[in-house]
Length: 98
Image 1 (cartoon, rainbow, N blue to C red):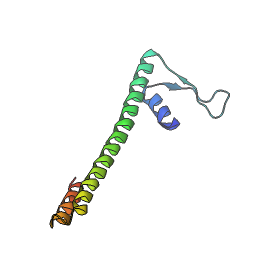
Image 2 (image 1 turned 135 degrees about the vertical axis):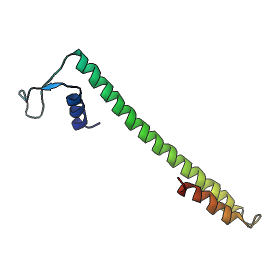
Image 3 (image 1 turned 30 degrees about the horizontal axis):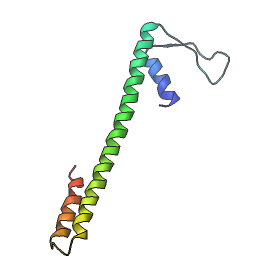
Image 4 (image 1 turned 90 degrees about the vertical axis):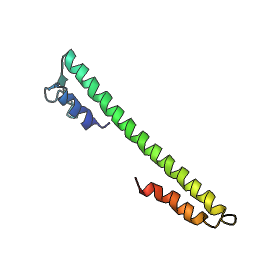
């Protein structure tokens, strides 16, 4: 998460901004207990979303690698089965259907 995303979540959780204290790079936020719980839920949801998206991308990449490996097996065995290129292309095409 970026600093801007965290600040946006603090605002969504209704933290109250009181401008900049002594350091020009920081901003002072004041909140009560209920705001902290709301903020924690927003942060957890964002972290889960990021982890989920990375997991889906890794899964899709693994499927594509396995599909290519299966197609390669067909092509490597071309001498014993004349339709191997046809099958290899069908296996690869399954990824284009999604």
